[in-house]
Every structure is written in structure tokens, then in C-alpha cells.
Length: 444
Image (cartoon, rainbow, N blue to C red; front, side, top):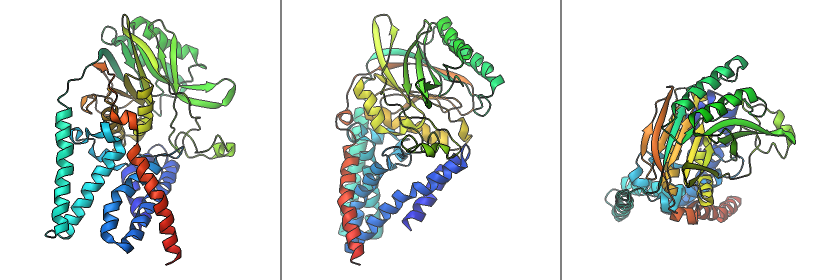
């Protein structure tokens, strides 16, 4: 029953993945419900001893399983409970302490309280649950209101965001690549005098920049003419191991030189790679309708000079890397003064997918108290402040640019220091609990 429930929930939430890859969606549809089944199994075993205890422990179990679901090459934290609250930033400001798993625990605890209240409205347990629920809500709300009164300080940085709105199915065609390059070049030039750093979407070059110098030179020339720094998505490969190719972001200086590059670390399972393909090369032959990228290993810190004498550092998250709290935290602790998210969500059409994807950045901004600038090929592009407020946002499938002055911030949060401890503790709680449940089954 737990697997069926999770199967339906996964399909209802992620059906839009069928747009670019039906095989990939089927793989995820059958894989992710395993975690829902594990949660249901543990809850079921505990409820034999005490239904009340099962409800009390369910938030801890849920958070532990969310943490497990985010591990490794199969990691897919898209449906974490915490992300249901990203439309209400004032309620989740405490994520700067507890991270997204702590917020998931909070949401689940509130639901457990509601269960006790609804089940026996006039009982002592219901009254106690109502008090706990009120305390949970008011603590989060009052902390959020207080925290959001603090002014945002830091070195000002003028940024420009390109939303080029190129059909992702068309831009890779040989005769269209120059049109794509010219369109991006015009938008880069339009940023002259308005931005120190321009951000273009994931794979905006529509080429392997080392193999198509004539195409790539269009981007570099536009950068020089505009007198800006350009962060642009492209494809790259390892010259020594040609089978290793990467989803990449590179930084171009105002004199047209490449001064930094980042290879995407957390690849989409069954979309950008078949998990464990590096260890078992035969897996590269399996076609889920996606790619076979290799994962990067370096947590790149891009450095640039937005104004004379001031050096600012930032890091880039490519595509759904923004769903991983540990990655943004790693960049922040390495020294990133703000974060960038580049993506191409055009594959998903006018579906909930691009909106779900965009809102991860709200949680990352709050956890790390950092500005996040997002460039999406067809939308949703946005700029999010350190309180998770979306200060600029585009619509889907419009060609446009955003300009805004953000701040390079240096505040380190409690979450930056302690990390995903709530998820880890929940996971460590689930490990012995699973052994206990298995033992109970053998003796049933």
C-alpha cells in the first residue's frame, strides 16, 4: 500500500518529465516509491506496538528517509516536504538554522498534531497537540518576522540575466547554431552599462566550445564589446578521456578570456546519466532518452571584479543541482558571496515542472543567507534575496532580460556550520529501527 501511495504521488508530481523522456520518467516512477514504501513499512511496524507512538515518530522517520533519498548518483530530493513551504518565506526563515530537513520535520510535526486534534477533538491529547501546533507555528512566524527586518548588507554587484527563450529541440540543429549565437550576442551587448556580470542559461552556446571555436567566438566577442563578465552554459569534454564529457559553466572576462569553468557535479539520474555508468561502462549503452555525461569533481569558485579594486566570488549550480542543500552549503563555505543557478527547462513545456524547479532557490537563499540569480532558457528566471523573497521574476516562454543590483554577502549561518544534521539524525534513527522492524517481521 505504501508503494502504491508513493507511486501515485510521484506520478502526480513529476508527470511532466514525460515531455523530454518517457523512459526516464518510468525509471523514476518505479524507483522513488521505494522510499515511500520504506516509510509506510516502518510506520506500520511501530503502529502494532502503539499507534500514538507511530504518529509521534513519523516526522523523524520521514526526514530520515528524505535524507536517504538525496544520497549519491540516484539522489532525487525533488519531493522533500520542506519545499511545500517555499511560497511562504516568512514561515521558513529558521531554515538558516535547521536547513531544509529541519523544515520538513516542522511540517511533518504540524501534520502529526493535526492528526491527533482531528482524531479525538476533545481529548487531552488533542489539547496538548493544539498547544504544540500553536507553538511550532508561532515560533516559526515570529522568528521569520524578526529576521526579515534585518537590512541586507554587502558589496553591491550589478547583474544581468538572459532569458533567451530558444526552442531546446531546435537550437542544436547545425544551421540554427549561428542564429542562436547571434541572438545571445545581441542580448549580451544590451547589458553594456547595466551590468558587471551577465548570466546566460545552461547550454546557451549549443555546442562543445572547444570543438566549435567559430560559434564560441561570437559569445566572446560580444562579451568584449559589452565590457562585461559572462557566465554561460556550454558543453565540454576531457581531451585525455574523450568518453568523459560534461555539462559545464564557464566565466569569460571582459577581454574575452576564459577565467573559470565548472563541471556539473550532481547529474540527473536517467536524464543526464545512467547511475554508476562510470563504474560499469556497459550501462552507457542503455538509452533512457537522455545523455551520458560524466560528473564533475571540483567545487569551483568563480572570481571577478565588479568594480575597480573589489574582488567578488560566486559559484554556479547547474539545473537541478539547486535541489541539493549540501551543494549550495559547500559552495558557500568555500567562499561564494552569492550563488547562480543556470538551467534549461524548455524541455518541460508549460507544465508545473519549471515552477517547482525554480522554487528550490528560495530554500537555498534562506539556508545560506545569500542572493541567488537564476537564468533559465525559457523561464522561470528570477532573482532571490537572502530572505527567500523573489524580487524579480520572468514568465515562461518570453524573451527578456533582468537587471538588478544584488549584494555580495558574507554572513555564515548556523546551517552553514552544522549542515544537514536533522536529516542525518533522522537517517541514523531509521537504521536501527529498520533492523528492529525486520526482526519483528521474522517473529510475526
